[in-house]
Amino acid sequence: MDAIRIRGGKPLRGQVRVSGAKNAALPILCATLLSDGASLLRNVPALRDIDTTAALLRFLGRDCTVDAPEVRVAAGSDVRPEAPYELVKQMRASVLVLGPLLARFGRARVSLPGGCAIGARPIDQHLKGLEAMGASIQLQRGYVLAECARLHGAEICFDLPTVTGTENLMMAAALAKGRTTLVNAAREPEVEELGCVLNKMGAHIEGAGTDVIHIVGRDELEPFDHAILADRIEAGTFMVAIAATGGDALVEGAPLEHLEPVVVKLRRAGIIVEREGSAVRIAAPKRARATDITTAPHPGFPTDMQAQFMVLMCTGEGESVITETIFENRFMHVPELARMGADIEVRGNTAIVKGVRGLSGASVMATDLRASASLVIAGLVASEGETEVRRVYHLDRGYEHIERKLAGLGGDVERVQAGG
Ligand code: EPZ
Image 1 (cartoon, rainbow, N blue to C red):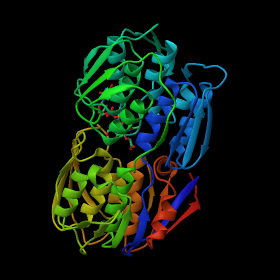
Image 2 (cartoon, helix red, strand yellow):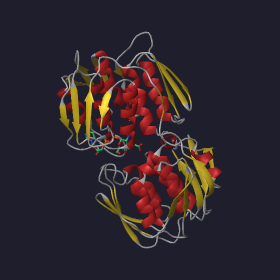
Image 3 (cartoon, rainbow, N blue to C red):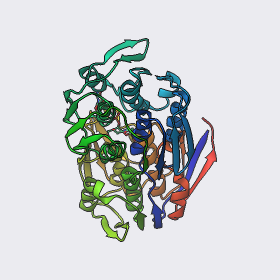
Image 4 (tube, helix red, strand yellow):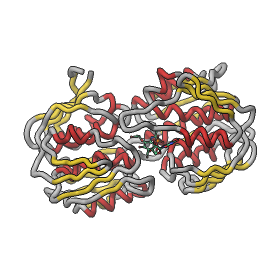
């Protein structure tokens, strides 16, 4: 089992390049099920989640070639509209094949994703939307069985904004008969990016990226050639790592326009954030100022940046309050950070962080993708001792060559073999 070994205490300097957005690539790869012919997706990061999605598409009968940063998908000989538990349990986003399979082939048998470390992760909004479009939905022995000869348009109002729920229903509506309106839709940039690709395929979608999306269904869609946008969460992670180590470095290709809430909070904490050509310069004082954050759906502060920002606050000056409103169990990095000397008290969905002078290295366990990123940042901050982050397969799901990228910024970071 791989681990990442870090000797911290050095300010990060130099330059790092942002890869393509994982959470845009996943739905767009699933959208290839909506058409025949060969599609090409460019600027795709080399990640475990991309490999898992490719394996799922192959299982469904597609020819899928991953040659990062390019992924090619073509129609195979036949299709098997079934996503098995063995694949779905590795990556919840596999549920994104449900809408396309149902819309294109009239039926789908997809394993319920089940919960994960950060929460129960239900998909009731996905299923209610598909039922509103005419699908018959049954839950049987851990699987969703969905059937509908041809979906029809509907007016759907989400009870709460859901990113993959919005994406699943956009893809289903793109081949449904008639017009669909999605109200209280998720506004994340990755949703907007999917809308852009579906329109390249011949769909009629307006409003993707806003909270009301209009879709006029087509009888068939075409393959696409598309280069995906930069990963705002990877960029934000590096920005926080540079800030937390008191560094001064450039993040090349950072999509600042998609990071406004993070930039506001970093500046509030006394961090210099300024555009330099196609890069963003991050420069930090020795200690950040305590700054409160509350996570919210886009354009609020992203829940996927909560764990990383917490590390910046761990050695900040003063007390900060971090409130997590999206997932019910997204503080699993807290006990691991406490083992490194952080002073954090959790009360329900709120963490009160009292800034300490410094952190010390320790062996820590990753539990989910963004928690593992926060532990790596804590290792880079720790001025005493060495940190070993175990179970880094969580990290490999969403960060491309992270040890190489951090070493490129002068971080003393290496991948090692470690016990379980
Ligand atoms: C997407 O997950 C992202 N994943 C997550 O990123 C991200 O944390 C999350 O959006 C929130 O921004 C992908 O895009 C592949 P939601 P998703 O549906 O779509 C509740 C990462 O680190 N909900 O927007 O699964 C749900 O429980 C990952 O890259 C329902 O109640 O999240 C949660 O509380 C982690 N019923 C809230 O909505 C539903 O049917 C938001 O979840 C669907 C969701």
